[in-house]
Length: 258
Ligand code: NDP
Image (tube, rainbow, N blue to C red):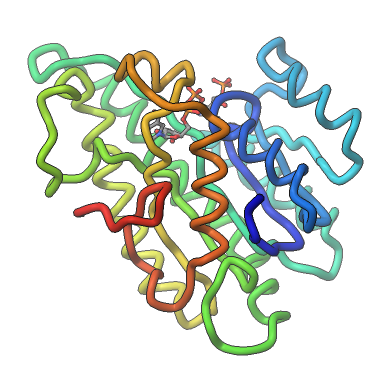
């Protein structure tokens, strides 16, 4: 099991797929966080039943409504988490929520491109802005200057599909808006790492592997399990340090070309 040590973590898009897997494994860790905030856009909906079931068994799991394309929802979520944490800050923010739309260069539209950007790129920007005061508080409360997830971190779940320098390409040509949005998310991560370094907050982009989820199966048919991916992701998070802020890594800790 991963050696990640954080006393609080928040995951967006936590009701299914990789987000739900992250929440599940965070709760199973021997040194599980004191608080795990699982956010999703419709906590009472059918798609959040597994998450609700987990919450009934784990008092440390707090479900918070959060639609990442809605500023007032983001502000309300940050306020609720702040009230719940009282005097402590938030250690780890995982911007995981994302969508993919299947469009080629010929069929891409203003509506689809805008929605994908709003969710995958602008969402993580606004969510990070809203939770910044709590992340700063966590960093201030940690002794030492070395960056790590135990001090305070923003992790943006990106994708190999957003890597401009990667050799692959044709297999994902039906996901143009998705790829552009993740390339932009990578640049956002770089900007965050430069801007938040002085506040003691580590920022990195992570490719979780090709994973069998609703999204993963729609993009690439042959992929790995959520459990394997999440185990890798949490292991990588436990090893991140100063040198890793502003980098793009995969679930095995390998550097992915921007
Ligand atoms: P899923 O489609 O299984 O889950 C996506 C999650 O994001 C759901 O919880 C969904 O909630 C949530 N979500 C979507 N839009 C919003 C929104 N506007 N506000 C709040 N939540 C939202 O995808 P995965 O679990 O596979 O993907 C998770 C992350 O991993 C994504 O960022 C994806 O790009 C990335 N990734 C995945 C890969 C894979 O192979 N699966 C490969 C590379 C990267 P709801 O149920 O309400 O729709």
